[in-house]
Length: 120
Image (tube, rainbow, N blue to C red):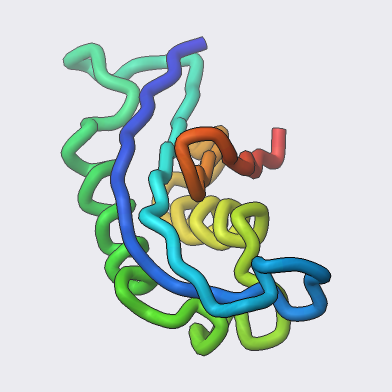
């Protein structure tokens, strides 16, 4: 199995509805996102997927989330913008471009805290 990973970043604010603690208050993060693609075979030049292509797709998704109040984003008006739900949102958007090659998405809200989403 071959795996490739790209990393990018975005900044945004959110508040966790129904949370009993400080995270219920408005606060922000500099999020780190890791997208992993996996597959059994390479193309004719030895690539699973060109890093450049993955980076462009991930950057387009993160532009949608960058420097906004996540609770106002269409996807998060009904569900909390938790790290877990952010990972699922990004995974599903990448799935539109890469299908079953998308293996997992990790969203880090700090150096010590992350959430991962995968359908495998």
